[in-house]
Length: 277
Image (cartoon, rainbow, N blue to C red; front, side):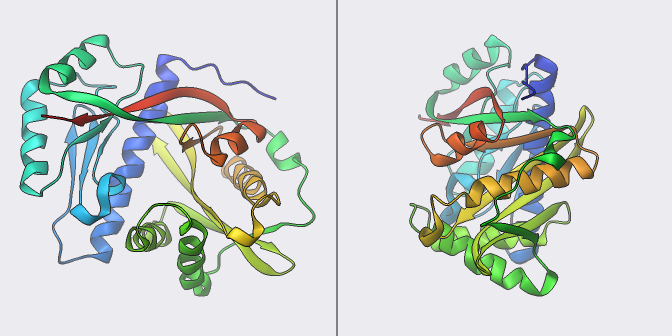
């Protein structure tokens, strides 16, 4: 297994890709809701996403913050004002590789850490093509006429969690609209058992193949569906010329365990800071 040693340069590459991922989510959101105001505002080298309040932090937060530009009080005040006018509370994802004075700045504005996410990375090589498959799970690209099925099955796979159905539906529709995203179905005995997306993101520091929106239907959990979807997307990313893959997952959920089993290395744990005052 090829190990990933996290450096400041790698962290900047991953965070730049994360900011672009969020920006493209907002751009696709605007296509789905053309009459609603939404923003992808630049801030300190990152992106502040502002959509609609009911969609929560998933589509209303700040990514890529302070990795390539030093933030200022005026930067934060401007974005805080935008969020306040939309009835939102700013939440900033902060890479642990930022300068320590960034944390001092946030603390002085009243931000506190409220959540954490694991950021995984994997260096890609020919082993991705040679990886053994799962004979019981067949992974195939989603055809254009299957996009409605992707949306419905993605939602069904997530419904046992805590996210509102409208958010789940919108996230799946966003993935289906993004030109940089390839979608996949996993089938067991010919029936759709899971779905997932792969976004191919070019940054000034190099490309990142980001695995996201993994969803497994309840009846098929524990049968290697997500692992098969991960292997298929890693192979597709390598064939597309990408040498680095990433995915994010909460520390306690099954996706973190599946990432490690699939050869990903924990690059870092990223905290989210929420304005508390």
